[in-house]
Amino acid sequence: MDWWGILFLVIGVGSLQYILEEGNAKDWFESAEIIGFSIASAAGLIAFIYRELHVENPAVKLSILRSTNLSVGVILNFVVGVVISISVFTFPLFTQIDLGWTATMSGMALMPGSLLTAFGMIMVQRTIQKGINPKTLVISGFILTFIFSYWMHLQSIDSGWDSLLFPQLLRGFAVSLFMIPVINLSIQGLQGADLGQGSGLGNMARQLGCAVGIAASNIRLTSVSADFRNNLISNISDYSENAAHAIGNMSSMFASTGLNPQESQAATYRLLEMSVQRQTTLLAYLDSFMVVGIVCLLAFPLVFLMKHDRNAIIGEVAAH
Image (cartoon, rainbow, N blue to C red):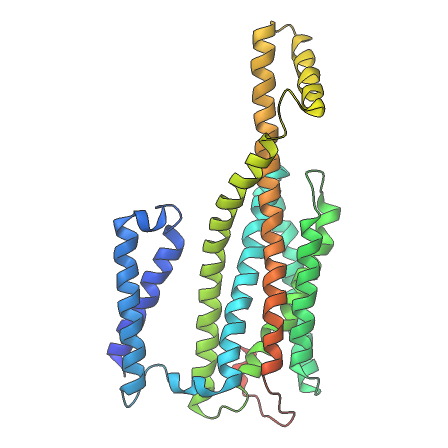
């Protein structure tokens, strides 16, 4: 057993996982803690790669990455993790913060898509066994995910269950189209113990993609929220006819409840701030969905680099 290799991997990936999860909250490299974990992660990963390339019986056989299918498959598995994590991470935030849903309602809205993914994966596996090219399924999955992203990008404050159900079903079906085919394509050409090694690398890449996706989504939400807020506020001024009209209507509404002019003005500005904040978060979440679509469009050309052998025998590991 390559205990040193496993130790270096734990240090490298474990530290990286901590950086991705806590970096945004700790203001990234302004934190001595994040800097320390970054050094530990880099040192652990470098030591891990060096040892696995030189030890006789490595814990992870990195040399199998010479296979084009596997190396491209690792990248695509990483992308799959990013796509799934951002989609699932952003949806509850959007529905609960902007639409006012409960956590239970958000979970119920995600459930149909998840169930469709489970049934779709069974169908996809049978389809592959019948001889269809897995590359066709992967490309179709990425294209459908882009359509889902664009559909979600068009949502608004007035969106409800009916307008969100079908995009979620589309997302669930799209995930089923590229999940198993990416694994199958990745390990084609590998034999014996290399099958397990290749599958393990793909799974690790997908898990890292999930962590990176959530971290990147948090960073993106923070940065674009500031931009959207500035753009919205720039349209609120005495020179804007629409803004002046809206402020006047709100002030009149509060005055009709018995508030004096100063109280009406203060209440108007509080309501205006709440409206701006709600629109800001809405635009940021819809932007996150569009990012998912762009990632899919950038990733699917990589599928053409992979080779498919109709006569390849895929072991049971592929089903996992």
